[in-house]
Image (cartoon, rainbow, N blue to C red; front, side, top):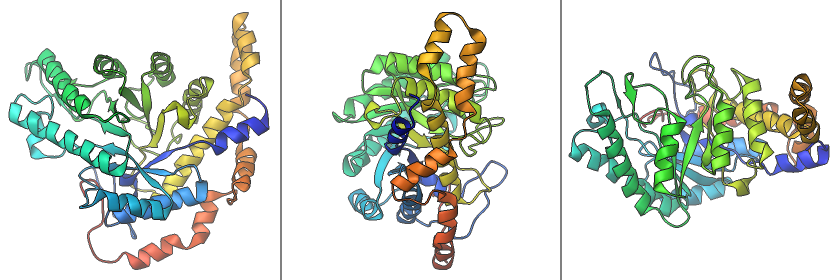
Length: 388
């Protein structure tokens, strides 16, 4: 697609999901730095997420993390979200923080620990029933640190058994989206280390099981767009966790480390119209590093995804196809580079004006006075963060 009106129309329909945990204190194993005005409960997290939607109009849903976002009444939380102008989205499970899970959760050698983990996953589906959420996102820290520590094949059998129990509980409009990570916290074997392992389990489960690609969960040099293209071809791409990494799962702002990679990924996505909401591919941010202000950091990530998408939409596919068919190596690359090197900020400013928004979301938020208000109001109580 190369006409500007068509590109603008596509960008107005883009949808990006925000992670609730990004609005709490977060960090690394070195340190979690507390910030003023950080939410103290899920209600305040959603209020902050609503500010991102207010200034971008493409971030209408908020993913929850259980038990970090546990409340007594999830229907009331959904009501609160609607009042704020957003909705509750993906439910993320947590089987990695309890002491019981030191040797794994659904792959643990102890059947009692496995049963506890599965019970938590089923509880998450109960929450989905209450919130109207479509996706249950699963990421398992399970693995081993030493050769001989456990039965590698046996752990895969345990994983398959647990996933089958969870899959059987899904409602007709619900899905499992399975995430992978090649290492950390397990360093010898990880039970879901790569897209192939996740794909194999999802294929065995059925149509309601898809793979999640976290852009920070790959070794240096991995061709992520190849993985994306393959999963799209197989109909098994459930969504993304968008962030940037320089070394290993840094959870930095999307596009901060390698904006060209983000463009290449989005090109594979828009080529088959998978950027559209009806494709059912979820575009969730998982950016939550420890030094940037929370709300502006999410706004910047949203804007970076928008810019990469706009550039991908501007690729002249007819010219690219013609060059590829005759083996014009440099010509093919030039078509992509022409789109990537286009300054799309004026185009996106026009999109925002058409939506009744300030063309500069970062500046508009800074002028809004919201940050000053929450710093003043959110005094006392326990700030939310990883584990709360």
